[in-house]
Image (tube, rainbow, N blue to C red; front, side, top):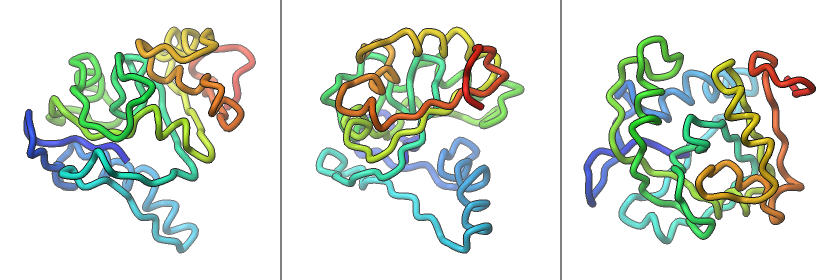
Length: 185
């Protein structure tokens, strides 16, 4: 999974789980711990070693993505090329501010770093199954924009789901609060 990192140049370090900006801690609280309790199966979080991120290689069976403020998913920011894999991304100010502003349901008042580790378009193309979840009334225009794509455009990273190598393995779920008629919930 993607994660915030400390530092503005190598060597980067993952932030600790106790940090309010930790994606892993949020994922554990919001989903993974609950799944483990219900199923009795422990769910491991896999993150590459930052020192060898370029050579990290693992196939993802189920990739769950959400639509971000910049058309991003995970820490994949606009301009990330199709050939991109696991990498350290420079997170946009809009991305950082949206997640940490007062009233945020995820990281309210946390200190987001300027950089984060992330998968890339190549991991989406190689994933066995991809699920995209879009929720919140503030996502209406972004969801409309995403649904208008027919091919990958690096200025809107989540459009990678329309790439011919993966489109048949993608399911999109749009919550009713997004306000798009005919959407799945």
